[in-house]
Image (cartoon, rainbow, N blue to C red):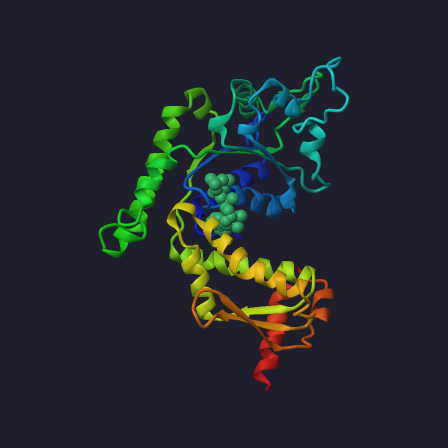
Length: 350
Ligand SMILES: Nc1ncnc2c1ncn2[C@@H]1O[C@H](COP(=O)(O)OP(=O)(O)OP(=O)(O)O)[C@@H](O)[C@H]1O
Ligand SMILES: [Mg+2]
């Protein structure tokens, strides 16, 4: 689930629908997207989420960190080396047709390729990229052709990030100035947008910009978005717990506020929040599991501790029917809400 990036989602859906209707231009990728914007706002996550919902698997994304492919021997990891070269047989190019088609099935033939931090791409990689964007075509080291016409190509860049950071500094934007009524999120996101697009136009050649279907600048995440992300991330932690020793945990409002407080930093988007969740919830839970202080079917209440610095964990119930719920043929999210409903019933009937 992606919070607060409506424009990006809309653009992906538009392009996808054009493709379903058979109206996308032939011999080009289905869509070429450039994602800009502050760190930790969902640029990478949205690509995984798109793969999850359109191709049924988040792992369908082939992710290329452009900074890692600076030299020609590194480019060989992408496209393989010419026959006769040392190591030719051992190389399985990252961008082969098999890799691209890996998650195709009878119904859905979609590929997802993500080039992260493209401003760091070497000239050689840049040329490969231009060919893919324009002709949906790549020639491997051994001259085989790879067809990208069933692919959605996503590129991310931190261009303009420094400028955006300055805009989001407390007192200047989202949190500070807005609180004083001097600015509002819509105006800030507009300024961030033009900073991003401006930086991209200055840095990238027109031949690159012209090959893009869409440039999307991601919005910084505000309090409301972070609250929603907290909810999602807590569900995901619960999912992870279910996969191991299935027990339930529940945070008090105070505990949630603590995590939000710890995890709110306009500069790092949701990354800070995720770190706070790992540190203050996941690690202590892992410790309880490792020391066998929790058992399957337990309900653990998580609250702020008395001196207000950490969290306290108390077993408030046990023998919950999580095992049976766990075996049910339901999605993780369903399973958890089922478990929580069961719990609510149990509590209510006391
Ligand atoms: N808009 C969002 N909705 C839901 N979760 C989000 C959102 N933004 C960030 N997250 C959470 O934060 C994590 C980090 O976000 P992500 O990796 O997408 O950041 P990014 O924008 O790609 O940052 P960077 O520019 O540093 O690569 C995600 O895995 C996700 O859990
Ligand atoms: Mg990213």
